Image (cartoon, rainbow, N blue to C red):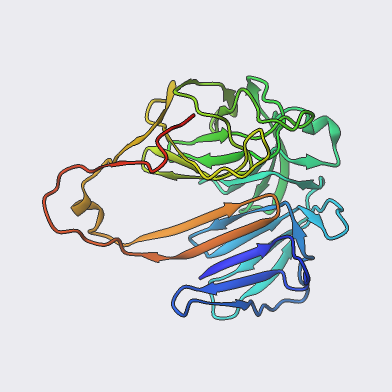
Length: 301
């Protein structure tokens, strides 16, 4: 099932969630229950707790462009979808990136808030503890990272968070230093060395697969949509390299011996698309040679 949360509606914004059934190929308005329901909103982000099927839905702007600080849980683990409101944050935020850590903390990185001192640098991270239902602010150390809208953030299994892209908030052009890494053990920001740097994107989509970060679509400095796909090799923690050749870490046969759960979020400044389901890769006959695939757009500039 694919869920579409929020978004900027042309004619009707009365429905908060639309769902797409991948078996019947049909869209429908989700039927949800609960003592109360969240307001329609844009410019927020969600995280999924895969073990429970809970989606944490926080912040954003309502239809009057007011900043929000309410936190909701959308339960998908039963036949009746339901909303539950939990503890609100002390700060109202929109335009952030949300990351769920293995220890149960959700990090809300960047964004615009009602605290102007917080917004200039990314050195104060608002956190929500899913286990204790508490909010706090975690100060970071290391390099000072200027606030920017339109960036992406991805959690690597080893605990790194890779922040990429975005725009200069005052100049409305893409940032020059576009790649940062947050160590979630020490909460220290670093600026790594980057090879083969392409033109920076903003308001793009970024997902991790094996030792690569795939960056797709988005905007460039000319404010026009960009259809190119970038591929970042994140194997080396010191030097990151933009590449055009994908080399899988395991053979095709080995990857097809199990069923994997895919949880993917495609986030823009106005809408959130969530896919939750099971995927069994196609099993290809033949030898077990390591595959290497060219990216369609191999001109990174």
